[in-house]
Image 1: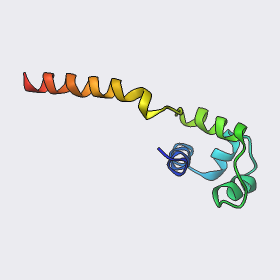
Image 2: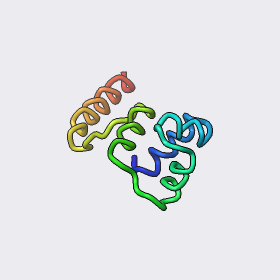
Image 3: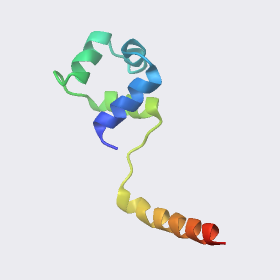
Length: 80
């Protein structure tokens, strides 16, 4: 997931910009400038965004072993 996708998840969960602004402790105008790329995002705002969306940053390399194991398990189950 990239940052733009994370923003879309947050907007979908919030339903409207004003709700997301409140959740991120921003004014609606500041949120609008962030969403339009006029201003950058701060670390605290990104942390709030991750918390609000219940997403986390994860390395694909760290999880690739688990994903491969799950795929193998599903193949075994589906073949039985």
